[in-house]
Each structure stands twice: as C-alpha cells, then as structure tokens.
Image (cartoon, rainbow, N blue to C red; front, side, top):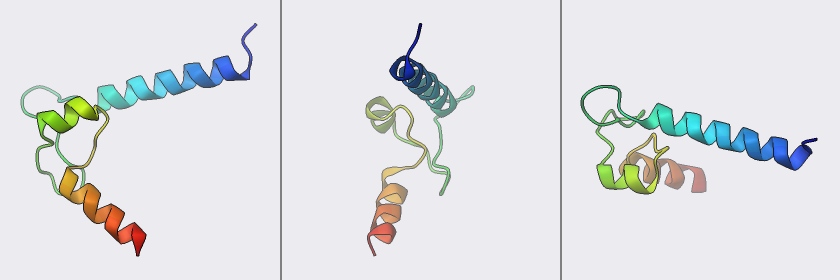
Length: 67
C-alpha cells in the first residue's frame, strides 16, 4: 500500500516529466522564452530542461523580485 511519500514522489515525477515535455521544441527550431520570445540556447536547455525563460529575462525577474 503506497504511503504519502510514495504518492508525492510519483506526483513530482509526473509533473517533472510534463514540464520537460512542454519545454521541448515542437517541430523545427528551439523553444523560446515565454517573456521575450528569443530562442533558449541548447546549453541552457541541457542544464535546465524545463527552462521557460532565457537567462536575460530570468535575471531581470530575479532582480525585480529582490527590490
């Protein structure tokens, strides 16, 4: 019988898989930043497969949050 930890682990794995799938390119080209529309570089996608923002936009959002 699965306990709460087993269910949480399964949910986390499913959500991660969904996020990775959503971040993958559809057809040709690279995934693009949801803020500026620029391509997300392959190196960033390799290190962070679920990335939805380019580094420039991510840094700008983090800087705005720190204020």
